[in-house]
Image 1 (tube, rainbow, N blue to C red):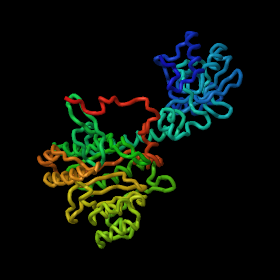
Image 2 (image 1 turned 135 degrees about the vertical axis):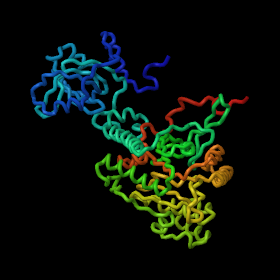
Image 3 (image 1 turned 60 degrees about the horizontal axis):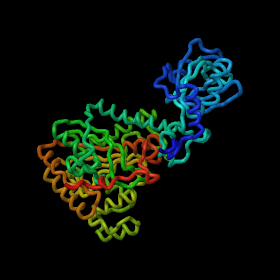
Image 4 (image 1 turned 45 degrees about the vertical axis):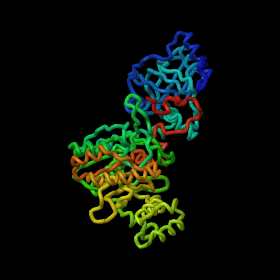
Length: 509
């Protein structure tokens, strides 16, 4: 049998205190406590309290943050989800036995319930004059040093629960994240969209160019993939007659981890029958700007050293115009070899890979333009080679009716007039599948069932996906996606768990 402290952060002194409390017959992990008020409710109710104790007794509960012992009196800070309040504990009031119990056994991190009367100290702080206290949970892992909190960035991500306990800024970030998701859902509900849930385990992955995570279902004897996007299933719903649909989805892409990428991430995908990419640009603009106003009360908000301005309308540029405006390159006035020379001059990655002017257009845009799109900007008219699910442009040969939204150099949204020609879709998938067979791990598979679905007829439809994590980054002034994902993907610290060999591959029949 292992010891209680092996592979844990348990403190032996705290474990000993638990043993002593149990020896005294004290319950230290009770099932419930009759909490009458939250901390904020007490502060609101007694905002005008004087130095005299309130006539009414109150009860509340929370975690102990700071303990200041002054002999026969103890001041401590108690916090719950809503805030913190000071407690005043006096030996003459609660009795010597209870006072010594608190003094010897209650520490920073413990959770207690208290009853008492509210008053205001001479320094003007609303405080609870404690009559009784109850131990609700004795913490065996000590919190970080009280004045500096949890400052180790990696530990903050690995132990988010501690980060949330000690860092008010982190709690506020995730309150805002929850609120942003609720506002997205409320906006779409108010505008007649229906929310659906589509499969996360899929026999064919699609809806984006990305490398999937692979799994295996033993009973079905079948390889499955974690979805990279909900797009193809949501469009099946449009085929089925639902004209305004959305999903707030968890997606999974087997890709690198950096400041704006996490293998598991959240997005909202929206599809609207009888609309096109222009309508979806307008919808995206309205959703995001309205959320900014709701969260901040204004359209201009700080992000790093920049002020982002979300007042509408936002800037809109074709991809070709953006490359000309930012880099001074008119791609279609140069031969492929001239473009290759320019690509080398600008030190673009893989300058030998593009084979056409349109492919070089994408390379120049991604290498020279994207990071410079700071204010909200829509880039539209993407080459057909890079847009296997978008409708061909009605007037520009070789292009599609597709847009992406960029803010602070990040792609935040991607939308288009949805391709609803099943023959064209089959050919696009076949071109993607050829790339995949030649080694492009991010190319899409052929989804024949989806081709059949739109073969039954899908109305003209506009669609857009908005990255929730990146949007939260922007609206909470955080420069890393790990700051806005509660439990981001991290490399494990030790080889404490391994996949059994028999589970690493499909069982043989």
